[in-house]
Length: 346
Image 1 (cartoon, rainbow, N blue to C red):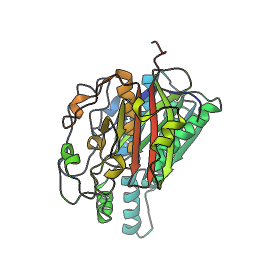
Image 2: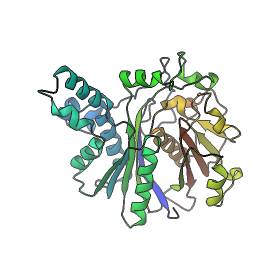
Image 3: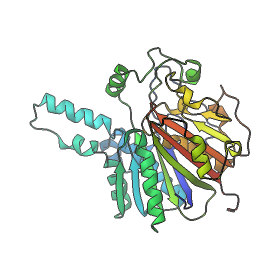
Image 4: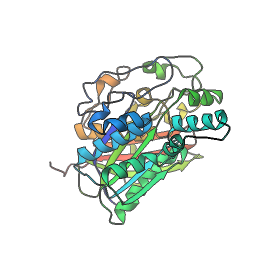
């Protein structure tokens, strides 16, 4: 993609105190059970009380993050809504399946089924903002968010304006148990802030939602590159950087998806100025959206939330070029390049 794409607004609800203006003074939230859950905001400012009672947790998280993102960009109705999710609303899916078994496929409540569909968050956003434009959800495991981002870039290239793009994911006790049976999570319980000191198989699980208002109008943070590679047979980083006429020496910060899993940490060996982020949010299909949000926050403020990285030597700024390299259990590899638009004055 050779066009110019700028992040005009963003919002994230995550296991950290990320939902607010000042993230740089927030303390690090840690867990000791290998399961991260979102720090949820007060939803009453974003939806009526009956919706707060009726909607499930992931629907409220996704809707609220999207609404705050649009508020931060000063956009009431986006030109399109595009999201990515690996599993959608897991709690509603599990509830619906349990009721099928409990009631033997009779007298089923349709609400959990309706809310469990992958595009339920998109529909809620469109209904609340009265948006009748393009609306799409990608469900492609570790490429879900990135395909949504690519779709948003294509829409801008075709002349559309103000694209709302984001991702959402939730973890449940049942899903944690199922994925623990196939070795996704560490067998030993560890403190999340010590994740990188335990190079054993598996990681810690997480969840979250992040949304961005993408535009072709100049802004401070530019999304300069995006590349998805499935099971690369050889390192692809140099090819990605060369395609954008940049080298590794020009990168001020590498936000990596290192997650403490000894099966995959070799992908990140040798990266300079590395800043891993999985001790903040855990591992999940669309964790790349949190990485993009973190990178955009760092470029926008020209500082790193140091309280969140007490175990690391934080690379010094300024931060003009930030590379994000993440992969999902060694299969889906993603490279994103963020650039400070120095010519933008606001």
